[in-house]
Amino acid sequence: MTTTATRPIGARPRAAIDAKTLRTDKWWIAPLLTVIGLTAWVAYATVRVFMHKYFWVENYHYLTPFYSPCVTDRCADAGAAEFGAILPNWWIIPDAAFSLPFLLLFRLTCYYYRKAYYRSFWMSPPACAVPDGHKTYSGETRFPLIFQNLHRYAFYAAGLISLINTWDAIKAMHSPGGFGLGLGNIILWINVLCLWAYTLSCHSCRHIVGGRLKHFSQHPLRYRFWTFVSKLNTRHMGLAWTTLATLAITDFYVMAVSAGWFNDLRFIG
Image (cartoon, rainbow, N blue to C red; front, side):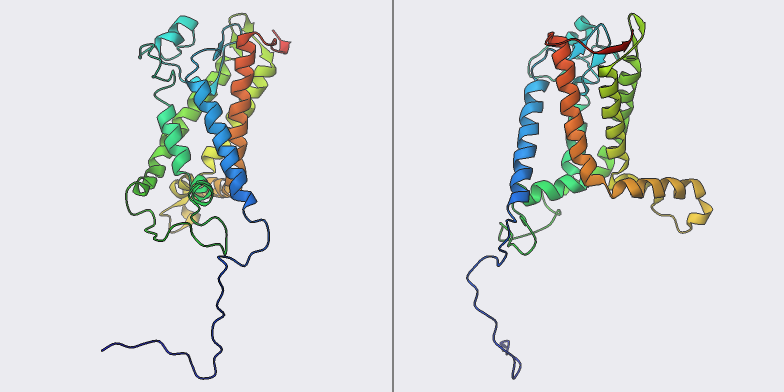
């Protein structure tokens, strides 16, 4: 026995609408800008990672974050192998081979970036009140999206890499000529501070700090840190884009000084 849905007596029939969406605003601009922005950044980063030069300024110990920690024989030859040269000089191997995969995993699985590339590259969905670009939806329960659950573990690696970037900024204050301060130092520190803000604003960090607590009053330090992280969390999207900009600017500045395009503006030393 089968039943069919019936319309209540007196109810108006639903309008037959052929259009996919009734939105008349330019809703497609946001996903388009996301595609352009992320594509441009990935293209630049890929070229720089496999360029294998102009990543180190020996006079001031400037090391681009794209190559930190530098672990190939190239790094040792340049004097940038702070933690030792472990890998050979094969072109296909990035000089920061140990950190880049974890940073990529952290960004790919980031809650904001998921929203960004789901809506832009996958059109799933591209905007509110706009149909999904796919007929079926299984969430993040199947391959490959099930690996998004690794985000909480990638957070720990990202925190460790932020510590290494901080060490790079500290070392750059003590060049072979002694203590010094230049425009490059300021750029390195701005990038480090932004990276810390983005990393700490992570949803996983907020859960780690304040999750599974039944009484905040019994954990005042964790509550205070949770409050701080929660304020950062509200700016997670802005910090995600800001750090992409600071990473590119820092790398370009180090590359330009290393290549001799211009000299570092020195204030001390």
